[in-house]
Length: 435
Image (cartoon, rainbow, N blue to C red; front, side, top):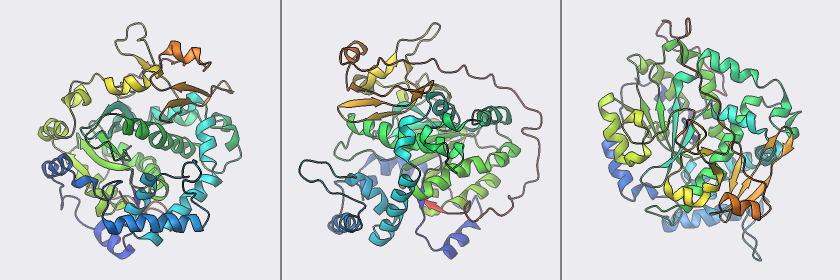
C-alpha cells in the first residue's frame, strides 16, 4: 500500500524545515537503489542481520515490554506474544532507541485492544472487505527478486463516481463487524485497518515461507507501484484526505512496512503534488519513493522484479490489471493454491478467495462473514480443495470479483485548478513519517 510508513523520530523543527524544500530538489537514484537491493545491505537491522549492539537493544526492548505487561516471551512451549521480526520493526522505526520504540509499541497495543482489531478482521463482512480492497493498493500475488510482495495502486480509478459508490456501502455498521457497531472510528478507517491486517497476517507470512535469497529473515515490508497517469490536479486535490488516511494510520501503528514506492506516469504538474505529499514524510521515507520517467519504468522495475512479476502495462509479462484478485506465482500456488478456484467462463486465470484470511504456517484460517454468518474454517497448507473438504473445513467458495467499471471521464474531474498548495492541514494530518 502506498505511503505506508512509520512515525518520525525527527524533531519537529527539522521536519518543518525539510517540508519547505523544493519538490524537485532531490531525486532518488533508482539505479543505486537497485544495486543496494541486489546485495545484503538492505537487510541491516533485520532479524539475523543485527550488530551486537542491536542484538542487545532487542533484548532490552523485549525485557522492558515484558516488565510493563505488553510482551510475553516464549515459555513452556508457548510461543512469544510477538515475534522478533515484529519487535524489530518498532526498533528500526526509532533507530533502535528503546524508550522511543516502547512508547510507539505501547500506543499500538493499546490502540489494537481499544479497537478490537483482531475481532474486526475475524468478523468483517466479506463484501465490505472487498469493497475496501478495490479502493486501496492491491497485491498482485507476485513478489520482487528478494521475495517482497508487490502491490499496485492506480489512482485514476479513485474518481468521484467510484468514491461515492464506495461511501454508499458504509450505511450500516454491521457491514464492518458486529463488535464495532458502537465504534466512534469511521468505517472507512475500520476497513483500512482490516487491509493492513491482511498485509501483516497473510501476505507477509506467506511470502516469508516461499523460496527467496534470504530465507533466514522474515518478509516485513511491501513494494508498491503507484500509477498516477491520467489523474488531473483536481482529482489529486480531492484525494488528499483519502491518501492521508493511509499515511496517518501507518504513522502510528504499522511501522516499517514499506520497502519502496515507484511512482509512474507523473504529469507535468506533479512537482506541485509532490510538494504536498512530502510534508507527510521525513527524509527516511522520501528516500524510498522513486518518481520514474516513462523511459525509466521498465528498466527500473526489472532491476527489482522478474518480468513475470511486472504487469504487462508496465512492461512485464504478468496478466494482471487493477481490480484483479491476486494471481499467484507457482511457488505460492503450491502452498495456498486451495484458495483459488478454476477460471470462470470467459476468464483465463483462476479466481482467488475474497475477504480476510490468516496464514499460520501449516494452515490457513478463512475468516469473515457472509450474510451475517461466520465462514471461519481451517485449511491445511498445500491442501487441494478436495483435501480441505475431507478435513471438515468449510469448502472455499470463491466469489467472482465485481465487474470492473468502465472508465469514463467525469465532468470537472480533471479541470484546471490553481497551482497552489492546500490550506494548512490539521495537526493530525501533518504528522511526518519514516519507513
